[in-house]
Image 1 (cartoon, rainbow, N blue to C red):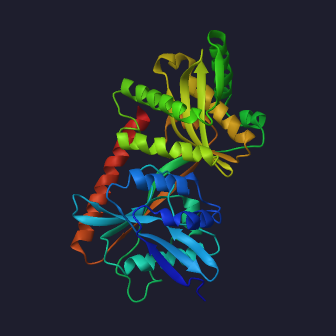
Image 2: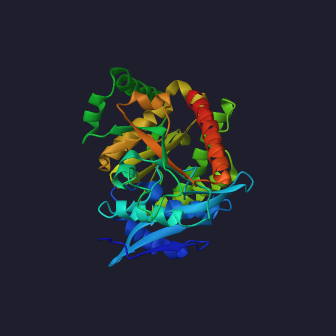
Image 3: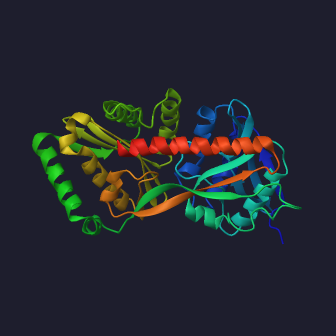
Length: 373
């Protein structure tokens, strides 16, 4: 017996009417991350949607909303075809459907069936699905046969980015026993060196200080990458504007952890992190290149992990990428996946599939360069 009474599509340009429903459904999803919050997605929609058209679907049951498909449809390759993707694409390390575990698989099948019945797209391209969320959402065998008649497409799965995640014990002392001897020694050495040469202050920005700390982080991040002749992750004004909009909102909801290392009153390193429920997320870092011999990044990362443990977190997620600094800590790898559904028998769909594959190869190559820099 179906629990779903209706699937509603929201095409509201500002998505404002969705906020109460979004927050209600999010509260029921144990696998949700900061990237599924209303704050993150509404800021993305205002600033980064770049012509995308909302196609957010809500599955309703007898007693209220059950799940959300936070998707949009965007023209690609100069308008040659239209792709369905998640809101937050590009800046989010985890994407996915939102809903309670017991009803989400049925809701996801209904969402996919609803998409397959419309001619508004040439390619469904759902990226950066965390393995846990993909499994709990029922994204696997039986996804397409839920549609009536012969499915007009086939689901294609592929692995995407690896996310190194450090499980956290209950105490900092236990965490230090788990790290390698060299890392443990380096943390103590560099912190003593800093305190010998500077007046050191370490803490997270809060309240009215968040916008100031964010601009300091932007400068440090850019300075570090410019020295290497690369743009870094914050390469456009729109990306900076997105984070200027979302960081204060996340701070107000208690999900921002913008850590700073200040030397003689001046910020020398910053970690742009998030904390959502029992998980901490390391999003980006910025460090003063002239102070590299003090390894401020090592000292500040240790502080961020310690703060996450104190805040009751059970894991510290370094997010996408195999950068070497992440593997100085005792991490486990989790691999995101990608679900692509081309429309069968469509020449534009075949073109969209080839274009999407080329785009992913280019992004992967660029990320490899950045990780090795």
